[in-house]
Length: 362
Image (cartoon, rainbow, N blue to C red; front, top):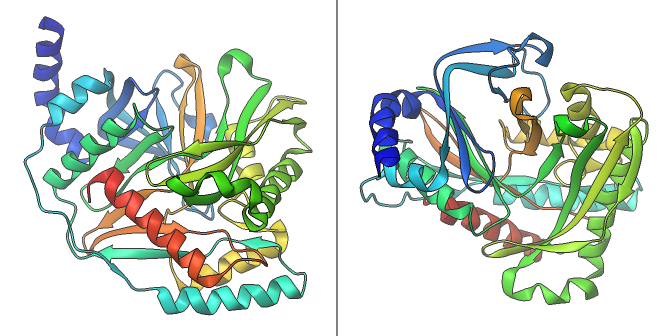
């Protein structure tokens, strides 16, 4: 009880600073890293203070000049205590509107033509649901609390970063890479592709479209890593989440020689799970789609580097809400291949949007 009271007193002091400008990351289901106070931006991981946690928040296309952030204050707190300390008031859920259905349909059929022409094998168009409701401090508290509660029941990772003008908060199931300082030669990643409703998970083994889509992602990741190390592919399995189930294959790489955080990001991102394949032609398609619909940070890499704690992790920024002074938006993408059906892909997008609303209490 004394420990809890101390945490409460300390959090009262940082409460408003953290909520107005801060960052958060789950270190495990039971431990959360909070950062707040004055912030400093850096261009490279080489410039960081290695005794302080650093947050990596570039844009999807890695154009951000200073993607690394470090804060003057930080603390590690148990998830259960933070849940109790947030204590948000009851608020009404926001109203959401999907505005990109025609754009998605048009690009879906254009992709079909690219598949027939053998220019692409897979691509991931995305849509957004928008709300004119702004991200208030009470909504942020509500979303944080709901997200923290998900950590004990789902294989997801909490991430977020915001200031007084804009922000992002999400629960992603997708690892871009995990790289532990205690075993610097071993890099872990995953292929996460193929989606069904939770109650329809069993027919995965009979679904050629989902299996093909997943295999394209496995091959794309292995191809991207081949020059950096020896790649080992694990056994395909089901990753069950609320509402959704995904196909997931763990992948490990033993590095041939030392490398950097940024080299790994550029090798892997975007994987075919959020990008397009083959990679070179896929990058052209991604830029074309971006010109039609700005994704901001949806699907971008988000990372945490904290060498003092042996952490160099990077995740894929999906299942999130982004906000600015105009309101909030949540995004969803779906893997389209030659056998994809428009109505099924649209249903998947809507399910993913609903999963975000539920997971962040929006």
